[in-house]
Length: 264
Image (cartoon, rainbow, N blue to C red; front, top):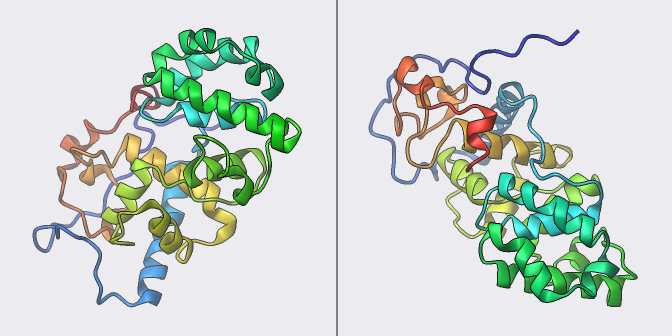
């Protein structure tokens, strides 16, 4: 029998404290020792696992090809929108061979709701053709191969590796980068450098699920414009505590349910 779902999923009471000072513009503290930062990061990572026990990839897929295409389509749109479009796309073009031979106009029409549909059609048609020509119609399970495909960078490759091949990967999307900088774990802006620095803090076996949890937290609690600091279970370890309301009642109003956060 499953346990009841709390009324405010994703919200855990913050440790009551007042910010010692105005949160720093750059939360990364160069005087924090690598050992101290690692210990703090791992404590926060463990708490994220408690806050977001249901964290998962929010793109719908049944195989590596579907996940690869869906991830490419998710650029500059929501997972919810992609999930509405991909059933029709995969019903019409179920594998790389079918998609590689697809009529461009038909693909563009299906992809219109995702925005930038012409560029996205170019990417998915190009990657399907590359899969057929260079990988016998199979999605490769190596980073070095995946990033050679049209429209596929390290972020997309890590999503596919982690969720379709069980190869640990850190997915550095907008939410992930914003949060790990707020946590004071890195000051880097470049996604590749962010990935490298966070890889040193979090055990490799946890990379994929850790990425999901951070992204969930960014969508539901630690929002870009107004973080729900007073409802955040990470507050006691976060140097950015105070950038959003610290009053628990006000903060709880900012916490989003899964359905609401799907739009981000």
